[in-house]
Length: 393
Ligand code: F3S
Image (tube, rainbow, N blue to C red; front, side, top):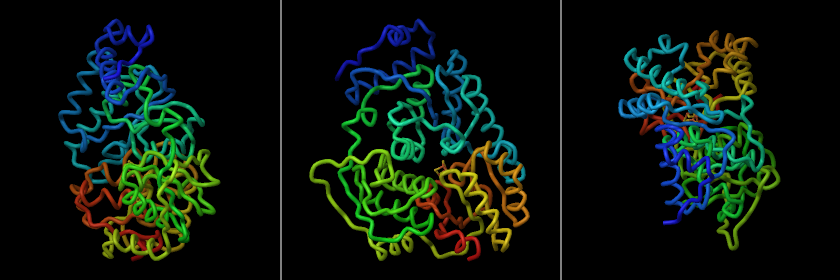
C-alpha cells in the first residue's frame, strides 16, 4: 500500500501530540489515503458531516460520537451537518416519537460540543456555504457532493460519516479521487433529446441516468436551460440511483471534460415518460414532501404562491434549512403554506425522519432521490410527479 506523506502538523496529530481524538481521526484519514493511493493530505475549507439522524446511526453511532467528544474532539475548520431525524423546533407537532427526539437531541449536542455547527442541511449552497471552483472540501451527503463538484466546481470525494468527521477534526482529507483534476472526466455522454420542463423531469432524468451510469461520470449534451433547483435534483437523483459524485452539463457547469471514446446514449421523451411511470405508484399520497434536496427560498415562494391559489388535497411539507425557514417565516411564505394545510420543515427531510413511525404510507415527491429511498428507508409507496399532480391527485 502507498505511504501517505504527512506535514509536520499532520504527523503531530498522527503521533497523538494533539490529543487522542485527533490521533484517532488522523489514523482514519491515513488508512483511507493508503487504500486509495493518496500520496499526501490536502487542507479543506469546509466539512459536511453525515451520520446525523438517530434513525440512521442508532445507539452505536451515538456512543461513538459521545466517546469522541469526551476525548476532546474539536473541529479545526468550519463544519456543519447533514439533515437530522427531525425538525428541532417542531418535532412534537410532527408526531415524532419522544424517545427518538431525545436521542436525536443527544446526537446534535455531541456534534455541537465538538464545535460543529448545528446547521443541518443537504443544500448548504443556498445559505451561503458556496465553495469556489477548485476549492478543496470534504462533504458527505451525496447530493451536496454532486452539486459542489458539478455546479460549483469545488473538489470533494463523497465522504463517509467517520471520514468527514475526521476531516473536520484534522482540517485535511486524503488527496485522491475527485480532488485531482485528471479524475474529473466523464466517460458517459448523455444526449438529451427530451424536454425538461419541470423539476420532476430533472428528477426522472437523474433517476434514469444514475441507473445507466454504472460507476461512470456522465456529461449531458443538449440541456439548453437548467437553474440550480433543476441541477440539484438531477445530481441528487443520479447520486441516489447510481452513486454519481460529479456530472457535467455542456455550456452550464464550470467543467465539461470528456474521456477518450466515451459511450454515448440518447434519452428521448419516451424514455423520460417511461422512467416517470416506473417510479410512480399512481397512488394518491397522504403526504407530499417538497425539497429533496432542501428547497431554496425561491422554491418555497413558488409553493406558497401555488397553494395560496388552490388548497392541496393532502398534507404537505416543504423541507429546507433552518435559515431559509426563518426567512420564509418572515416573508409570509410559511404562513401561506400552513394556511393551505402544509408545513415548512427545517433541519430534516422525508427520508431521514422516522416517516414510517409517523403514520404515513404513501408519500409524494418530485425528486428522483426521494423516490429511490422512500420505499426502502421509510417503507413508503411513492407518488412521483409534478407538484400540481401530486398535491392535487
Ligand atoms: Fe436531502 Fe434528504 Fe433528499 S438529505 S437530498 S432531502 S433525501
